[in-house]
Structures are given as C-alpha cells and as structure tokens.
Image (cartoon, rainbow, N blue to C red; front, side):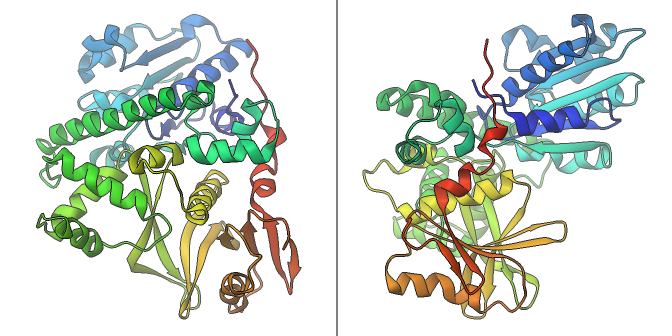
Length: 416
C-alpha cells in the first residue's frame, strides 16, 4: 500500500509536543492505516510495545470502553511509569463525552494523545471549547492522483488518470482493479454506512445539543446529496436546493434544507467553498459551491454513463489545493468568476480549470477573468489538453495531469 508520507510527516513533526493530534476525514480514507504506519515508525525509533495503547472503537472488543470513565480508567491503568506512552483512539466520536477522557489524559505527564474522527462535529461545540489551544488538526483526504499513480506502479498516466477520475481515490477501491461490480458494491456500502451511522450519531447528539435538528428522512437526505453531486462546479444556495426538492413534488422549508446540507457536510462527504470578491477583498455569503470528496462516490450517486469532464476536473483540483495546504475560495472579479483563489500565509494563487483550451471562445472565457486581476500574484490555467500549454502575458497554462503529479516522488511504496 502507499505510505501516506505527507500525513505521516505531520504526525512525526508533532511527536511528543504537548498538543492532542486530531486526524479527521471521511470514513475509509485511511485514518486507521495512518495510525498503524505511525506506530510502526515509533517502533523504529525505539518505542516499545508497552508504550503504545491503541484502541479502535469500531472493533467489538472495545465496546465496554464506549463510556468515557471506563475508557479513561482502561488507559490510565496501562500508562508506562517511566517512559512516554502513546495513546491512539480511533473513531473516538463513538464514545459519549469522550472529550472528558481525552482532556484528562492530555494533562498527564509523558502521555502523547492521538485521536481520529469521521465527523466535523468532533472539533465543534464543547470539545472545541474544552480543548481550545490544546490540539492540532490533520485533515485527511482520499488518495491524491500522485499517490494513486504510485500505488499503480506508474504506467500510462493518461489511462490511470481516467481510472482515477472514474473510480476515485478511496484506498481500498484502488486494490479492486477495474472490477466495476465490486467497486460499486464497496462504494454503496461506504455511502450507506455514512448515511446510517452519522445520522444516528446526529440523532443521539440532538439529546445533548438542542440546536442540532434531527434528520428523520433518509430518502430526502439522499435526494439532496444527489442534487449536490450533480451540481459540483455550479453555485448552489439553500433556496435553489429547496426549489429542486419542491419541483419533485415535496414542499420543504429552507431551514430544513440547511439542516440536511449540514448533515452531509459534517461527515466530510461535501465541502463548501465560499465566494470571494477579489477586487473588494471580502467573502460573499451567497451562492457557494459544493465539492464532493471522492469522484467514485459521485459516480455511484449519479449512476450515469457520461460525465461532465470539466467539472470533474475542477473537483479534483479543488481537493489537491486543500492537500497542498491552501484555503480555497471561488473568486469573483466584477461580473466574471475565477474558479479558485488559493491562499496560504502570504501566498495567493489564482486558478482557472477547464477540460480544454483549444476552442478560441473557451480560451478567451478562461483568460478574461485572470486578465482583469490587477495584482501580481501568479495566475494559472489548468487543462487536460496539451496543445495550448505555455505562458500568455504572465498567465501560465499547464497540463492537469503533469500538475497533479508534480512532486509525485515524495510518495514511496511501503513493502511488507
């Protein structure tokens, strides 16, 4: 399997620092495997087995530890007396009031705590307040194309990119080859698990947090998820979703839509991208875009033979920018739009994404918004065609596959 070096390096960077390490991301994106890899690394550094306590709350043998007091006592009894103890709590959100146990372990000397979760509420509300300033978050995503390419041992990158775009980058999918039936069954299982487990969890939290509305209609939730999956790359609003549901014969309030969209964002299925006025330097609250974390899941949701290549490419580029550590917004420049404004510290990058720049009309449509920006930050068009590559008055046109594979050598295969 691919060693997730970039995520592994982040854990190594924070080793023994007095902060809780929190790894978040959609189910089955590789969080548990990352913890195993990190534990293997610790052992190479002289850490002994009795210094490692690892609990996965999806395993039945730890069912008795779903009470935070039981969990705390279990870990406390196994802490090493004279050396650091590394505590790994996988899918911790299943433990009622887990933050109390985590905080109590955090304040102990020589205890290094690592937790994972598959829902964004993990770092919201009471936990965020209790652990404010005491944790760092590592946001994990499915395989990048560079990792996917390395896992497939190289080969024709154009062919592999088509496979990646079709099947997505959830790690286990990549070992199923091109067996469409197996892939579809696996993706359906993940999707239904997210719908059931996370909705059930939301219902449970409703008893604790009265601001959390219950999600009572799974069919409606799936209907909205299909609408969002079909709308990637296009502006969406609560009103447009409500209008869509109403047009299918069911009246629904915008408040209800808002709750159901939140229920799809929390488990990391969809990621919202707000619009940013490049000239006015401010965020715009209306008509954000939504991107789906994995194109394999999108194909499963939409179940159709033809795909909008440009929007699918845009989806891939959005998540690659997140992987590279940028915050990403949709850019508004007057009456025109820039696909992505990517920012990290003082760095600002502008990106347009299109399947092809060959047609003159498309070329002008993609170039015009970038030309309208008056600052001197880098401007790039990412495309799948190889006929228009080059530099046009300071605007660089690059091939998408080459751009995605940039730095692919950082990913090394792990051999058993």
